[in-house]
Amino acid sequence: MDDWISAACRELGISPPLNISEILDLARDAAHNVERPAAPITTYLLGYAVAQGADLAAASARLSALATGWVAQE
Image (tube, rainbow, N blue to C red; front, top):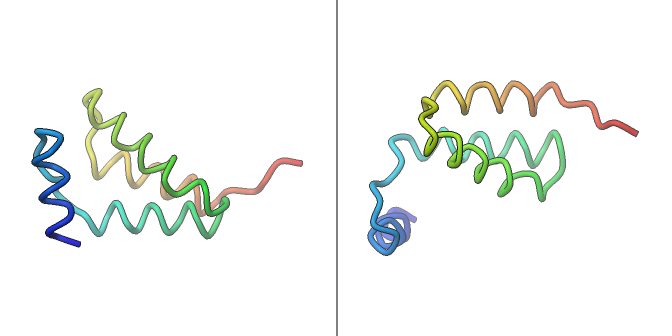
């Protein structure tokens, strides 16, 4: 996967994220506590927030806490 991440980052002209495991942990939390399709959307939103200046670790922790405490609204 490291090769894929490096190639994708080169293709997009960006630097790889600092902590891949943090992003994967967030995706797991969203998939298991919200619903599976929430994982890619949540990680996209994390990336968007970081691009807007948010701290990766802080934003990831906030979203992870939101996901693990999530109770679906009916």
